[in-house]
Image 1 (cartoon, rainbow, N blue to C red):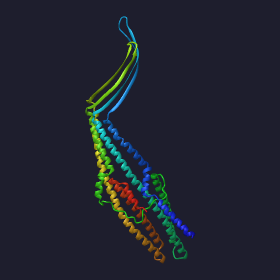
Image 2: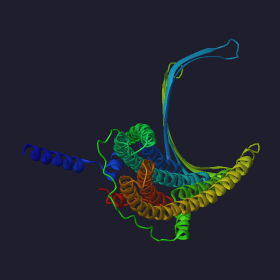
Image 3: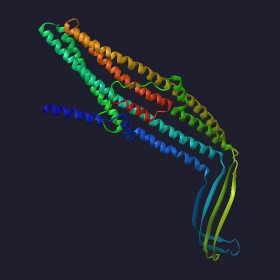
Image 4: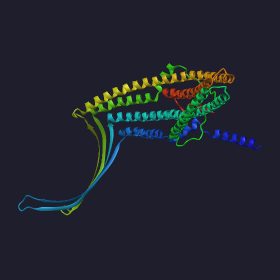
Length: 441
């Protein structure tokens, strides 16, 4: 009865741990709040959004106030005979408020349009950072799962080889096998021990990489469900994905905005040849303190309203040089835009092929696992009846474990390729993580 109770408690504990295991979606959301790279992108977005009000400020009026106060101590001597000297000591003070409203400043309008585009670039950069976070988290998550699979496979292989080693030793003792079988099994066992150590070390490294993203080491991760079906990309056409990437990729959006900013920069620099027109209004008060020489003080106030026209004539060639510089930078931005489109299309094609070939590999490895399992069982039977030797069983075991390992890797690589395909097209969202999350056990 105690044994049954212990088994029930153990089963309940495993079920509870599995229920509390972290999944891909929860790990991503933790990374969104902890990852330093994504936090930097968020701060960069806040800074980039300020480009819009900065650009708009050039179209708005400016208001300034100035004030002064001065102590005056003067002495004036006339050039007469005899000379007459007059001294005066008094304080003068005043203040002036000035309002300037640009009426025509083409460079300010171009700067405003650049501010709009710069804010759009910041939004695209942040969206790209979010997509990059999804891919990085998914890669780290599946790296841990693959490392766990590798460690478990290494442990299982060591156990199987241990059993084969013990069998070889017994058969040698009773004279039904040679010492060669024992030596071969021992060599495989030693290799399995080294492989298991390496797998455990790699698992620690992969878990630390995930910990860097989320700030903690999750005790358990939900694994990919056995037999989970990975669907083909929709639409199932590489050319369509490449065409979508050329217009929807976020790097392309950034490059296009940068090209438009370069266009505005040309107009901004050429505006250095244009006249400027401003509305200027001032209001001020001033006063002169009591002077013993005059016997009085003066207070005055003034209001002025008018327009100011400024026409540039020659600036030593600076404006013309800035114009040529802007044209050259626009050509660079255009080349960068074309390169971004080509790279986006290439990335989409590569990701599509990764999904397509990955699905084919998964199917082939699933068949290979079944075949390897049958081959192992046949070799074990043959070894028991004496038609197979120990090395045949060991080779069959190695082949089965290696095929299982490759199957797990192919599944994870295919899922990552799916995310990278959506990322290349610019439409990777949290819903895609939800879909993959549904495949976890």
